[in-house]
Amino acid sequence: MPETNKQIRLASRPSGWVTPDNFTLTEEAAPEPADGQLLLRNIYMSVDPYMRGRMNDRKSYVEPFGLGEVLQAGVVAEVMESRSDKFSAGDIVTGMAGWENYSLHNGADLRKIAPGPAPLSYHLGILGMPGMTAYVGLVGIGEAKEGEQVYVSAASGAVGSVVGQIAKNLGCWAAGSAGSDEKVALLKDELGFDAAFNYKTTDSLHSAVHEVCPKGIDVYFENVGGAMLEAALFNMNPFGRIALCGMIADYNVKPEEMPPGPRGMILMVGRSLKMQGFIVFNYPELCQEWVAKGSQWLNEGKLKYRETVAEGIENAPAAFIGMLKGENIGKQIVKLADE
Ligand SMILES: NC(=O)c1ccc[n+]([C@@H]2O[C@H](COP(=O)([O-])OP(=O)(O)OC[C@H]3O[C@@H](n4cnc5c(N)ncnc54)[C@H](OP(=O)(O)O)[C@@H]3O)[C@@H](O)[C@H]2O)c1
Image: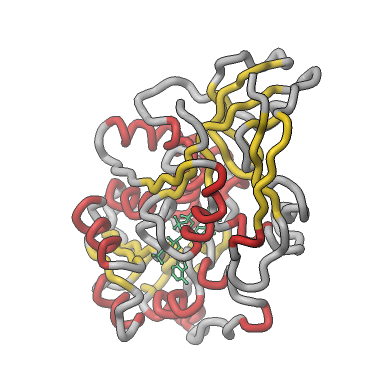
């Protein structure tokens, strides 16, 4: 049994950009499970954009992180000790736990991972919440159909890279934008996107979006917001759909410094556009459907997957900040222990 446990706690709330001193590393005796509890050995931990919102002291669709408390993340873990009749020692599970090496858990919302060909870390990415988000947003909200034109922003990330590949597997045109030439090459040469551009080096977002979607956009999968939303809006086809998944360009902007909303909203009227936000976990059936379909497509070689892996709980804050700044290619995860 472990003797000590290292954890990352919220030291202070960021104002604007997150900085390393918003986190603190603590070390204490490893916890012992009480009746009904499990002791988890966390193997992989996910860092995700929504965590930036939980660092603010504002209630959203999830509770804010508490000051001084261990932060929470999606993990893949091994049950080391079980005092619950639902799990046994040795089970591999996924669910929410702490940014720490060992967690106590009551088993609620924890799911056993059946052994399969996919690496365990994929359950935090393509077969986990980000993959489910891509499917819910593109198929459930965007209602993408064969032959349609799909455009996705933050296209090389955990969600975006899956969106474009689902679009291709459905028989759509798939175009995307990303923040480096290396990422754009990945989209076109490895992930099968039809077209992509680097939004950081383009003079005009409006024309760059037009160039990658010359037949207009039927479904825009929105990850970024701000100027990108406006550029997509101007390129939408009649009866197009905009699935609002996230707006990462705004996450580190102080509320008083937020830019005004996109121009051209009247196009929503003239072109009969639909725009809908969504939170992935409100669509459990589609999430389940994705786990089956995504696993099958991975086995058949119809999906490619990239991840960026940081090592050790000490490096989790840097991995999180790096992801917000675009240093990740594909899904950013943190490896905490050997499988
Ligand atoms: N609605 C839901 O249920 C749900 C669930 C999961 C995720 N999301 C949202 O989905 C989006 C993608 O999440 P993810 O987990 O897949 O993260 P990710 O794309 O793997 O990582 C974030 C990426 O965002 C890009 N980015 C950062 N700042 C940007 C800016 N100012 N303008 C344009 N791009 C910027 C960076 O890539 P570049 O190098 O390309 O800039 C970075 O790599 C986020 O908005 C997230 O909040 C929503």
